[in-house]
Length: 68
Image (cartoon, rainbow, N blue to C red; front, top):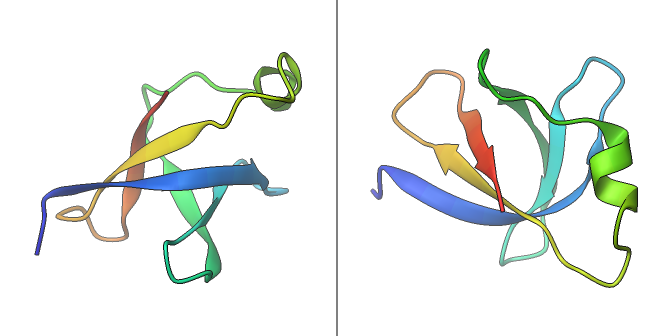
């Protein structure tokens, strides 16, 4: 399995989790890494632009380590 994967960001959960959508269409939350600074306002800056989360799949549970 890949160490890092990219998933489409579709929102932020109540507890600060990043909500992502997989290539197969499944939507699920991923914990934010402690050093990642990302807010709901970041999603709303440019609504035409798609944001992608880089997810560390070796961490348990999986962690979002960056947003592009």
